[in-house]
Image 1 (cartoon, helix red, strand yellow):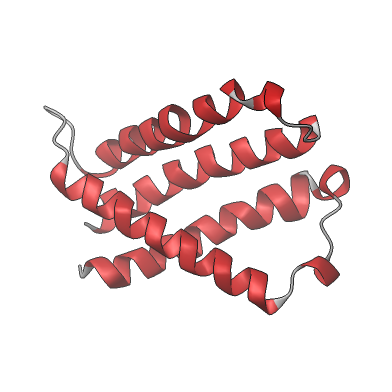
Image 2: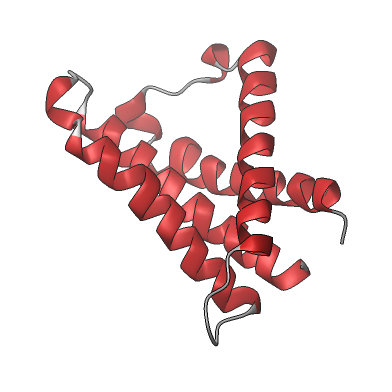
Length: 126
């Protein structure tokens, strides 16, 4: 499948995870409201997530893990990207920021799960 189309499908999957995390599970602690979600914010988020998905597809295509292919490779790379490249650095810097604990938990959970779901989509469709 074309990488650009696959990235678009992966963006939809990542937005679905974001809807569950931000819109359902952590809606109260984060104070997320529809008034805060203007079109500029949504457009910027979409572009940035699309670039992240394209980067993930490149990683999937060029990073070999012996004996692992398809969805399993996508999940492993999703965990590497989500935990190793996002969650751990964010948590290590947590002491320097005054963010609410619930907000930080929601962001980390969203991105770890998003990268894993993107990995499943890419591994399944690639």
